[in-house]
Picture 1 (cartoon, rainbow, N blue to C red):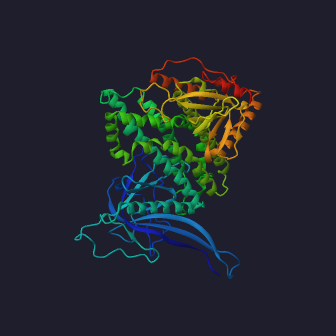
Picture 2: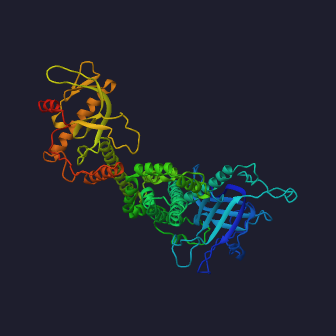
Length: 618
C-alpha cells in the first residue's frame, strides 16, 4: 500500500539583488504577516514555526540574496489499496524564499505566492512583487495597496577581493541561474530574465488556484498592454500637449494658431482620464486575485467564492459607454495628421520645438507620429484581447460577461469605422467640388464617390460620329455619373494660392437615366454618347456601374422613390459643406448659396445642349 505525501519541487532559483520594503499604512497592527519558516533538511516548510516579519524590513536596502520559487504538490494513490494505479493530486502551496548570503539554510523571508502580485518595471529593470496581506476582519482581495513590496533586480557582482571563496551549492533538482550586472550582459537579457520570473510566478499562482495558466497570462497581457498604452497617453500630454500650450502662452511660439492643440490632438486628454480609470480597475482585479497556500495564515474558509480575476468582463461593460469618445478621435484622424504635417513643414519654429520634445527621455526615442496613431490602434485591439481571454477561460462563469463586453466593443469599433469612412467621403466630395471651381452641384445629401479615374474619351455629335480625343476625369457616385473636363493641368496648378479651378463639370447625370454599353473590343464603353477608352479597367468600370445601379434602386425602393431619405447622412453632408466653405475662404472665392436638389435629372455646362438632348433620348 502506498501512502499519500507532499512533494516539494524547486521551480526556479537565482541570485538576485533584493530589497524588501514595508509600505506605509494607517493600520500599524498587521496580524496576517508573511510567514517566516525555519527549514530543515531539504528545506520544506515546517508546520508550527511562524515568526513575524522583522521591523528592519521597512528600510529599503539592496543586498544579494538567493531567491527560490518552491511549490508543494499533494499526491495520493487512486484506486484500491495495494493496486497499481496512477498518482493524482495538485498544487497545494507555492512560496517565494529569500536566502541571505550568510545563511544558505535558513531563509530570511518566506512569502506566499498566492497573495503576491508581480510586475516588471522596464524603466528601472526591476521586478516588483507586491505582497497583499489582509487586515483583520477583511475578506480576500479587498486591500488596494500591498503590505510589502519586494524588488528584485540583477545581482551586483562584488569586487574580486570581496568575492566569497565558497560558491553557493547547486540544487540537485534545478540549476541555479546567476545574473550579473557586468557590461557583458546585455540589458535585454536582464529584462528577459525578470520577465521569465514574472511569468513563472503567475503560472505557479494559476496552478495553485486551479486555473489555466493561459487564461491568467491572457488577462495579464491585457493589463500590461493597457499600462503601456496609458503610459503613451501620459507621454503625449506631458511631452507634447502641455509644452506646446505653455510655449504659446509665454510667446515662444507666437505664430501657433489658437486652436492648434484642439485641432491636432483632439480629445487625447479625455481619453487619458478614461483609460487611467480603466487601468486602475483592471489592476485592482488582478491584484485582488488570491490563491492561498496550505501554509498561509489566512484560512481557506475566508476565500471569496468568485475570483476577482473573473470580473474583467464587468469592468469593460461598466466602461463601454465611455469608449464612444474614441469615435471623436478617429473621426478626423487623417485630416488632423495632414494638418500637423503641413504645420510642421511650414513653421520652422514649431518643427524645432517638436523635435526637442521628441528628444526628451519620456518619448523613449519615438516620434510624435507614432504616439499620434496609438489611440486608433488600441481601440481595435480591445476586441482581440477579450477574444483571447474568452478562448482561454475554459467555460468559466465569466464567459457570458466577456462575450457581452466584446460585442459592445466591436459595435463601437464598427461605428467608429463607419463615421471615419463617411468623413473621408465627405472630404473627398469637398475636395472634388473645390477642384471644380467650388461647384456646389457636386455635393448632395448622402452622396458617395464610388470610382474615379482619368480616361481618354470622345464625344458623338448628331448622326455622324465626330470623335475628338480628349482627356477628363470620370467620376461615378452612388447616385450619379459626372464627367469633369480639365481647365488647367490634369493634376492641378500646383500653386497653393492659384484661384483657377482644375476642372469644369461637363455633365452630371443620375444613375436612373444612364445606359452603359460595352464595345466589341472590350477595352472601351459608351455612356451618354461618349466613348471612353478604359483599357484593362473596362471590366472594373462595368462591375462598378452594375453594383451602383443595384444599390441605387434598392435605396429608392426603401425610401419611397427618393434617392435618399431627408435625414440620411445629414451630419456628413454638413461636414462636406463646411469643408467646402473652408476651401472657399482659403482660395478667396465668395460663398454661394446655390445648392441643388435631388429632383434634378441632368446638369450640363453652357454650350453642351447636344449632350443634354442625347441624354434625354436615352
